[in-house]
Length: 423
Image (cartoon, rainbow, N blue to C red; front, side, top):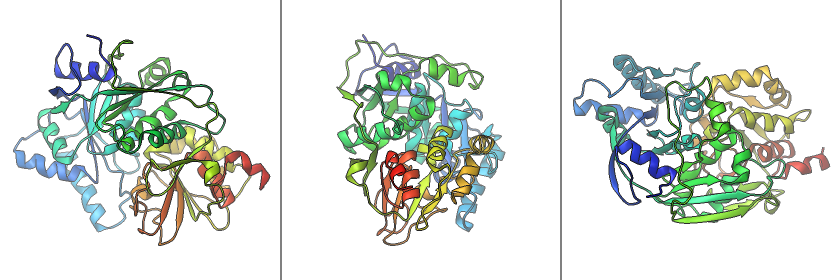
């Protein structure tokens, strides 16, 4: 029977020749992860089970990234739980402040998430790793505790929805625009418990940073996972990076899928998601002129080096609008250092932006950029629910780094190409 990429990965993990959508399986986990917000609950549940050791101390990653550097006593206590457990269990992949990064940027960077693997994490954006050709999905903290103890978890095999992008992607558009457009077309539950598989000529030309952005937000359409089949770009990214052997898997060309969409993006405008849903998307021209108070460029969605380069290209020789606060957060220490070496940080600081050490921070209203009542933000993050970044009376617009940087300069949402008309 011909199988999709998702079905092949899950069949391998379950030790079966083949699986079918809707089938319940028990599968072995290749990599598991938790952060300072979700792992403390998993650790408490793990200790209740009574198992002395985790299933594999090299297959579990613990990354404090949500509320670090610690913003208060409570967040310090959460981070300490991770630190203590990592020491007790001799966890290989525990990354402290100063050596860490936002988990969904850090783990691919370190070569810990690989093609053909089954990866789970106690964070909904674990689906990011599907950009490498893995089946990666978020789980609850109690599920993570079970994985920590046994190395296994049950799944219902999801159907596959195939998204094919055709045409030539216009200047200033990237992975964020493609995934926002997808979510706008499908809705927040249009891919509920399905695996979104992205392919086509446009995807084939994208670098890994853009692909990771696309997979990252598959969950915002309700998907269980978002996958891109590995190719030469994937393998080149992993060369000298992968920390263990892996076998890339590929779906069969004739494998049946639940639905298929073909979209030509040659005339696509930069996309913006209006409050308060990632599915409430519009072309940037539809919201041009919307005044903003704060801009955030970063997060597990758009804090990688290509994102920072695109933002810096907009900000070079310009300054942030006097009314606007611009916060730039490189997603990992390595990205931070590379941005420094390339002169990007100098560009941001000369533009009068605030540059932060890696943290999820403002994305979930944690710290480093909380919004007051009535304030408006443009963010390269992944969610804009009511109260997501601060006061319930604040509003968040989601966009790619080019639109975000242009908004920081203009003081209002606009197409990046229009900046030359106002500067």
